[in-house]
Length: 410
Ligand SMILES: Cc1cc2nc3c(=O)[nH]c(=O)nc-3n(C[C@H](O)[C@H](O)[C@H](O)COP(=O)(O)OP(=O)(O)OC[C@H]3O[C@@H](n4cnc5c(N)ncnc54)[C@H](O)[C@@H]3O)c2cc1C
Image (cartoon, rainbow, N blue to C red; front, side, top):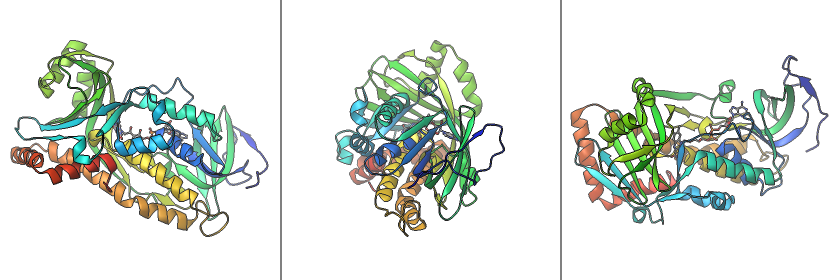
């Protein structure tokens, strides 16, 4: 595509998005989080001009402590992208124990249930981010940091996108605008409707040491406050502890010993005593799911398309599949016709292709949270029985395990 004449407006100029774009780009990705970066990397295989805009200045600004449980399917994608070998210590998950507080039922998933060598791998968001970033920087993607997309307009031929960088406003046009910013920019797209549910919960994240760790074992323990997950991480555990929003602040303020003793109360002593904890951080938890992820010349991926409760560790895994399948659709488009990048036909194909996986991820995650946190003793007994039954039904265990590993098509 020919470059257009460059313009750079000073930051206090009025925004006039549709006048004289600086240049034309085949694909513009707004948001360089892990999903946006994965898409940019996947597109490096093909001959498209790609501009990746990330609002954060790097790398200092990205110190996100959250652990990510990657499915085996995500590992395969990250291997294809060359990211996997850059991760220093992904910890394999060799068993998942699911228990429900106060009830005897439990289930135990193993890699055999899903026919894979490990049920998943635990990595740190920060490490994954850094690995993706260094590969992007080595490739041909035009990657701009400290660059915030502020507004955009679309017509049948293109999207005009305005962004701010170093006090300057820049205007570019693109055949396909990919919103990978977590969800704020989609508010400018009238066709996108979000289904939003606030769980009124937050997740506390911390790294822990336990007295009697079980190698490779992950624990999903459902309490009346919400699910408590312990993921194997190095020799210790990464904690994702869901609590009602009103309790979170009090627990975050506790000294280390008091915090560990509260945690012990909730989890029990299956791993012996918790002996050390790192810094604690919290994230508010909501479900935000777009019914439609495409609009004129625009597509939503990753958290912008669906922000899920972390209980089943599905969010990034789903987002990575969004990126991978979008790159595949883009690669099959043809220049300058009804099938070009960003055409209604290409977007309709992508929307259809992702529907079942996205819908399945939302239902699976949302049902888990609701089923195990309803404060009704009968239901609690039923879920206890359900877990016991699941443990004795290999096909059902296989279903749950493959769902966690490969998504809806598992
Ligand atoms: C506590 C917790 C635990 C989790 N655990 C798991 C797990 O075990 N497994 C799993 O699969 N998922 C998990 N998730 C979900 C996972 O973190 C997200 O799904 C994933 O981070 C989504 O990546 P993303 O790139 O779509 O969005 P984000 O990570 O939100 O990245 C969006 C990027 O866009 C940038 N941006 C925002 N606005 C603009 C703008 N206007 N212009 C330019 N750039 C912009 C942001 O700076 C950011 O870098 C967890 C989430 C939480 C909160």
